[in-house]
Length: 468
Image (cartoon, rainbow, N blue to C red):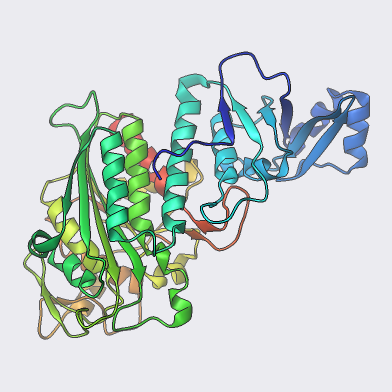
């Protein structure tokens, strides 16, 4: 899952394939000039077809050989997704992008994002068209393809059925990624997990597939021993039944995606390592299944965490924060420059900001602003929600240091973030991203299924602040 080729791309710095056809990407304000530069027959054809260059409008151009090229309308869209429908709408074969009023790197990325389909168990109806991708200034092609490969990896992991991607298999992917990039890795399970990560052990106690923590550390080739430390933690719940607080049947249909936070963290790590930034990286993935059995944790159980705080289990379906709290405690004790976690954590975040906007919580305004700004720039948006101190007492428990839920039916995403904040070392610059990690329907560049949300935003912010 980490070494996918991109069948939609042909990298080449040699002369262009003579069979390749051009794609002209046009905005409404440039349409008149574009038509004026075409052969009269083609210009008349586009006018007769009513082409206006609105976003995602595609027309194939006839020519002496039958098909002479294609014209794509961009409208006002300057995101990579403007090119996302091309791979499945253009006829199969090689194509190239004529220069125009758009960013070539974004176009290559958008083309790749739109070409993805999860085909492990069902053959695709057709192969994507192929885009010729010559080198772009500043390594733009390599950067776009690195991001695309990471997105394909994240999507593959989220889309994989839970019977084939359990805790052990997810941990294996993390270790494979570490090995491929020369990182030092560890794998913690069994009795050692009970001691080091007791909350993860408690969440996974009900499943026959035992929990695992996969971790690795990496340093850029030019990074000094005291280079900035970026610490990443991911919720890897490979399937979530809700435990004894059982989800309804409809609520379980997409619970294979509950490891979307871990998958996204691996995507972020992959991009940062392939960019060889002058940073140190520490990655921790809590891989677990929340199941029901005679060994599963129960409502009312009390767990002593790695931090030493005791937690009363108010709801076994609020397990994601338990998976993360021990990881965050360990990571924050290393005094990272940035500690960031990703998790498909709460339905409340989706109610607040919908499926397309990951909810961002942060103890550090600088990092929150950098990620939000980068997200707007690279079309990978996030939306900040408050760590509202007034709700912190809602986590109080009469029998333990805190409960894993609030008794009040409000601000569920905020309360979850406040729970995890309790486990940080003082002064830790922390960012928590509550993701949906899924596309409910297919749109240009965003096929239905698993999605790598906020991944490019985080990487752009890290590069800007620590390697700019």
